[in-house]
Length: 91
Figure (spheres, rainbow, N blue to C red):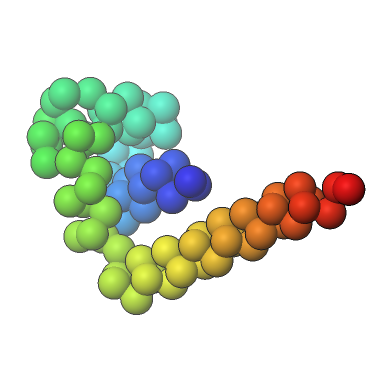
């Protein structure tokens, strides 16, 4: 599923403008390194990868979560159906 790969971007994206304004020389690699560390982003242990599930729901509107989940579910269903049809068409 693609969604877990998007979570860090959504979490860090909501804080990016503030972080960059406070630290104009901040590089993406530094931000990611902090996010994936045990210390968290600039020492804030609340903003780190092990809290991604809670943070995701804090930064993402419920409507968007439902919409994305529905689209992914639908695409998975379509892909499954195509695979099944491809297997049953071979005679």
